[in-house]
Length: 431
Ligand SMILES: Cc1cc2nc3c(=O)[nH]c(=O)nc-3n(C[C@H](O)[C@H](O)[C@H](O)COP(=O)(O)OP(=O)(O)OC[C@H]3O[C@@H](n4cnc5c(N)ncnc54)[C@H](O)[C@@H]3O)c2cc1C
Figure: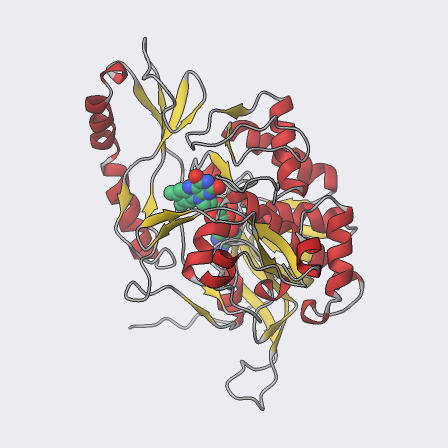
């Protein structure tokens, strides 16, 4: 490949802070709110001008995973910030009808249903309000470009690991350095970890089928509407599942562009298919496509522990649980595998990457095999993971300790005191 030598230059230090969160999706927004609520000076950078990530920028308007979708569903496995968002949306009339078959709970604290369709505009508002109230310093329209680190990449056991000191970002003001004691990588694609030299992988098709990506779109009903709920249903309009694209690498800019082109050119054909299936949609119309194709999976970061299919299927609880998931594995070798227990644990070690200090991973790219990922990728558990990462980042920064050396019991006590569900009682009993 031909190369161009970019000359080195000095860049301004735009922030010198305690915690920087990269990415304002479900994981990143929960991480930033949690870090700031725990007293850390926190900056969040996000390429769009609002929070929500896939939920808002890709119109994925159904937040799933507050409890098992089927019995045994007695335990609400995700509480904390994720629950608060749903309750605030309820107050604002921001909940619609979820298309997922489920038992309806009353939507009270500790009494949430498996899934909620959410008004994406109200979700932008509620999450922004919560971030502002917590004191998060928001840098929108800002793109993470590189990691700032010292130390060599771990090539053999004799070489020290890298220490992360912040990130380089680019926005309308130009290229800037943001220094931090701890960085939370909530970019979904593990951009920070990859640039810092943490080991990562992408699932290979021959090992396990990957989830495909897809473009959602919003339709407005005309004079009639189909009986029942059409995807995420908001009465006069609905967000429907649109064209999906063949498996591609969402961290490859050319493949990503081609996938956007392909999906966008198929929207009206896709809608015509739905109209043929539901004649009531004859005078309905497509009113919105989101800025970004929904990307389900890209890189996974190798952490101190990799969550396994057996952990999820057997309902394992770890002594160092920091979040839980009870979601089905959505395509377990081709079928939706519901869990036969109330939920399994996600240990802190899945958020701690190998080889890089001062970095925590939050969101869909944590250290996990394909099958458990297909469960905890749902947005409720993803927010619980984000809350754990943000809280851990704040505690690490305050105690001037690396996240790897953090006292996990202290983290757990803090999370529980702030309303998170960790499923610890069962772990203590060895369940
Ligand atoms: C088609 C589809 C259907 C789905 N269906 C459901 C469903 O029904 N229910 C459910 O609960 N979940 C569903 N999911 C899964 C869920 O949406 C994701 O797993 C979840 O959003 C992951 O959250 P995250 O915060 O880790 O990453 P993301 O949502 O990907 O957020 C990452 C954020 O980081 C920002 N970012 C990325 N790179 C940079 C950068 N370099 N600089 C600055 N900012 C950056 C992005 O703009 C984004 O805001 C679906 C996903 C897809 C794609």
